[in-house]
Image (tube, rainbow, N blue to C red; front, side, top):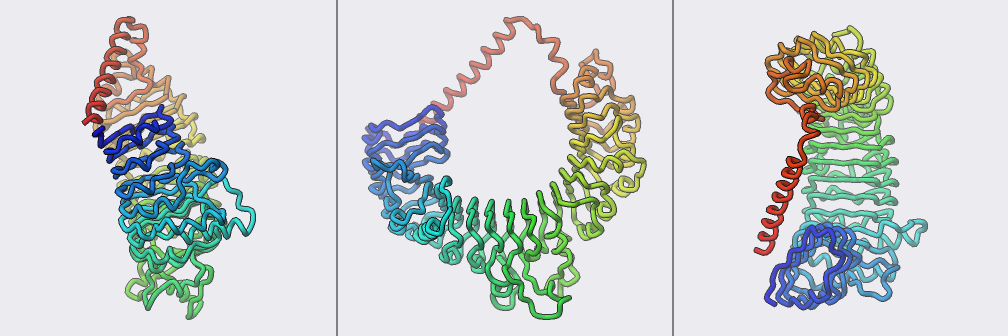
Length: 569
């Protein structure tokens, strides 16, 4: 056969590729992406001598790649190489890693799955010659996730395995998953072109290799490294070269996710000078704009991040933030520069001990978006929020301790935000009683108001007509909300109204006949769910239902025909 391209992608029922497929000697491209149940490839895959592209991304059930792949020396695309697990390897049909030795034309992405820690296996990993694959740009190394790491011999096996997996220095992205070693291989420091480095579920890893040579690194993601105490085993000065105080000069995004034992960036902080000047000598990330910290409760000290724009803290304390705010930049030219003055977005979720927004919020002079979620002890947004001169969007969710502030008559905060705040989202605040918080009426500049998941809300007050700038209004899952006030007619700028899962209110908004329809009929975009107007059609004729079902079937049939025609082309 002269077939050169075979595309079976997204075939959810495909369990295996027939062995007869190996007879397609002219085949150049085999696309099997997202065949979610695919378990086996053709046993004699090595006979596809002209194959250049084997795409098997999203084939998560694939048990192994067969022996013989090493014969395909023209292969350029191999998205995934699955090693047979040890317990399934007799009889052995799965290829070993050394099958990759001659495949030096591989380019783009490669994911190697089910790597082992057993010494007799890992001894051959070096023969794969990954360091000769100069066209590879992304490499994912994924060890078997079901191994119990319970003794030193197992740990040493992991470290030996990684030694033989050194990629070419041209690689731009490196991901390590389920690695069980205490330390990483020293070759990691030599990947000077690396742009993205991700370590995930490396349970025994205690520290990283020095990263100071990775001048091109833009993204560093550390996820679920349970034993990690220090990111660098050096002191802060040893990680720097020359007189510069910059660390990872190209780093733009940093993720520290579920690192329960992480204490600080460096094992030792050795700084000369007076005690009060110590903070002035700490290095900084000069380009960092995004920082995500989750479940790092022991973390206290980090490098500075003077140009940070987006910060997310989840299940954490404010210690890393407070420590940073007490620091000054080492350069005299920037010594008066506030470390977080460029911050635009701040998300705080489940912050330990947060009872009010502290005074140092005044340093957040560029903050545009503030989101506070699941902080039950938070009782007051003052004094911090009063100083946020650039704040435009405020989102409060699951902060039941704010009930007194929201339900009270104290309007200091809202008056201070008037003229600034454009968007207010109030979610899952069970202690909002009966009516919307009265003090919100002072927000005459407000353009968007959302109230969601509020069981206690029953009334929208007449003063809502004070919100003369309001453009979007939404009520979602407020089951006891009963009616709209007359004042909503006066909101001439309101062009979008959403009422979702508010059964009583929805009935009153039925087109033409609902008690509140005249109050909202002028609004251009109405989103009503469930749509009360469809109740009248529940008993529509069976013929109309059949006609609708037939149309849907015909539309799907046309789409299938188009897809089939495209695949054949």
